[in-house]
Structure formats: C-alpha cells, structure tokens
Length: 239
Image (cartoon, rainbow, N blue to C red; front, side):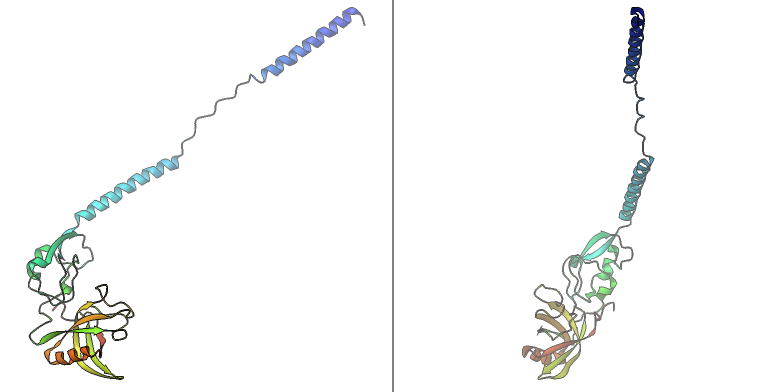
C-alpha cells in the first residue's frame, strides 16, 4: 500500500470515529418531556362537599330540636310516697318531650296539693302516673317499719308503691296478717331498692290498716315477717 493510500484510510477512519462520537454525544443531550402536573381526584372533592352538607344538616336538626324543648315540672327534692306536694317540691326544666309523659310547667297548680303515689327522686320528670288524689296514710292507715333478711322478699326486689301480702312465718307455718299492704319506702345499704337476689338486709315501711298494724309490728320485732308481691307499683297512682 502506497503512502497516499494509507493516508486516505486514516482519513476515513478518523471521519468514522468523529461521526460516531457525535452520534453518542447527541443521546445524553436529549431532554425528556416534563411530567404533567398531578391530576386532581374528583372523588375527594365530592366527599368534602358531602361532609359539609351533612354537618350543616345535623346542625339544623339540633337547632330544631332545641327549639322543640318545653318547660316541664321536675322534683326539686325527694318526694316520698304519700307526701302531699307543695310548690317548694317543684322545679322547672326545659326538655324535648317527644314520646315522654310529662307535666307542663303551667300545670303546676293542678299538681300542688296532690300526693306522691311513689317516691320521686330529685330531678325526676313528673308525669301524671306518679300522682294520687288521696294520701296513702289516711285516717284508717298506719305505717310500720319492717326489717327483712335474705329470702324474705322476692328475688326481683321491691320498690316503693308495690302492693304486698304480709305473712307471719313461724317454724315453716305461714299466716297472712295483712292481705294488702303498700310499700311506702325501701332503704338498703345503697339507699335504693332491694338488691337483686337479696344480697343484704333492708328496712321497708309498710302502709297497713290500723287494725293490722299491731300484729305486723309484733311479727317484725320477732323477725317473722315475709312479703309476697301482689302488684308492682299499683297503690293509688293516678287516682
């Protein structure tokens, strides 16, 4: 190969390398297209709108509920069964009374002078079923305190206003000494109704006739009294 031929070959090789280098340099310089901005999620926007609408609806319902409240009578302090109700026993509260038996505050005059047919604790809403037109402790009645131990009253317990039969139990033999007595009050260790199942002793005040009072008191002193539940909360309520 002559000198001229060798020179031509080198020139072609140099040109090929330069072309290749130029091609390789073009690739890194190629710019990628920018990513489009994040697409918004329409579902979240709809959910946010629904939550706002729901919150407004709830607030509106609460406002309407508050507007529906009315002034009603409640017990200011404990009113024991048979007690004649006075103005000092009553207070007024504003409540929503839908579906609840209550006595409107403007009916206080119709309540004053009546009697409690059952014990009414402080703050309790008054309803017509709690009231009686006559006192349990009338001219021919007497109240007798009876201490009762386990097994001497129903397992479900007793409440004020219950009607019971008073039985004198001696050596397995029982005799009714008061056919119908009314439970005036029940006092236990927690100052409430009997504990279920008779877990503790309790003192019960019974309203009986004066002719029966002596026998009941004597049997109570000898720890011979058992009570039989006849009616739950009957008494003279609503009379």
